[in-house]
Length: 365
Image (cartoon, rainbow, N blue to C red; front, side, top):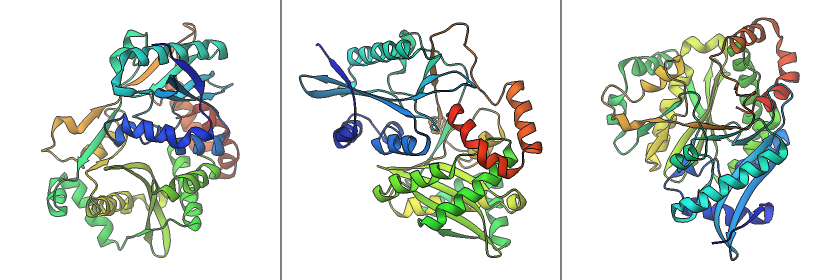
């Protein structure tokens, strides 16, 4: 087989999406690989797309979505894909390992030409082939899959007791939940996001990123925004990405002042009920580092009787092209923790809104 490689453009969008869905077993591997996510990243941050198509006599037999991330702060990289945690990377017809290897070789050739520090792929299919080609996993990461194939009552009883108590606390404090897919909702989501990221000591996304999500994903039914309200104020929000039989929790933010009311817990419960009522089979809680507060929070939604296969290891794989530059940005390293503390305590919100997106673009995670 002699393959022809080329870069996809907008005219390939429908064929690309059809190929992705037909050649992936579930939404786990197709959501972020869709062309819509490409548009979000380009519109919000201006990344250069390297969406590679492999063709055999005009037929698509493989594709590999990547973004060229230029970073003076952390080193350039080819990433599949920025601001995602799992299910990205190459997709090949019928799981053909030979096509996958050729795609990985083509990406390496492009990466060498661009002189990037590394290639990063977030939990792709065919991981054994990646390891054979020199990729490695420098840290652990997990997601949590809640089974929706049961009644709402059974789902409720499956939660850990502390999860149910957190939901009840929000309800007793008269926190309410509304769905709002309007443009006004986008502004509210961004406002809460900025406050939340400031409290966490992390640079925020740009408002342009949230507008790109809204304009690209919402018309295709790939985005739902829920808000928690208290005393007439929107105090928390979550964004869901419904796709195929799965709803993925993509964004969760709350105002620091109201965090004690547990609005995120109530929002998640209402979102789970919404997904269950509409026939979705899986609620994907998204990635977390082991032994973090976020990890234990999400684990509680599976309860004590979960099956081990509901906690999924996410292999973020790296191919380092410069052995002198093998360091990666991680919340666990002391330097990151020091910078995070300074950002949280010393940088005023107007400055975070101005310079934060510039840094976030270069972090790309």
